Length: 243
Image (cartoon, rainbow, N blue to C red; front, side, top):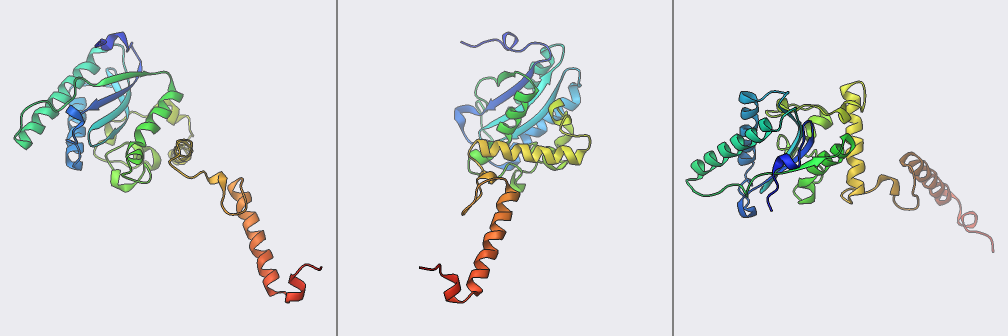
């Protein structure tokens, strides 16, 4: 059963929007197509929308689907109208570029309501990590996804053709008083999320003979290294235990 969006979203709802290509075909596989999709989103926002209508917080574009997060305003219609225009424009331009006919999108975008700012943070991390889960890049900030997700904007303050359409969420602003501090804490939280999801080795696990905080592990490694050096220098009779 198709549930009306107005039954899910309410004014000022935080949303997670997912748009999928028809039959899950890799229509967006070329990075040029990913950028074309983002261009349609950006230009429709610039031409017909304002911050009172809705805002976008983040995005990540994959080969057969796209993720966007944001928040609607007092009314739902501007957000729905924007999606219809932007997706219709992209579908038309895509078919013209490739001299094809037929559907580009699978039905309408799926829109979920996000509970609060903490849930939004995890949702944005989930979106950022899509290329990592797909095995395309080792880390969400990898240069190969530059501009195709909002991750580098939040991690390094890096601006691109699409970062101007983003509105920074409250949870990110709460990370610190300066951009540098917010970026540093964002990277740390993102790495923590990757560890939790099994996509990054836990730095607290250590390696070799020690497990614990990174500084403590390094201190114990130095001590062990020095012990081994001292005993290698000692005469065999002194290095061996008595008995």
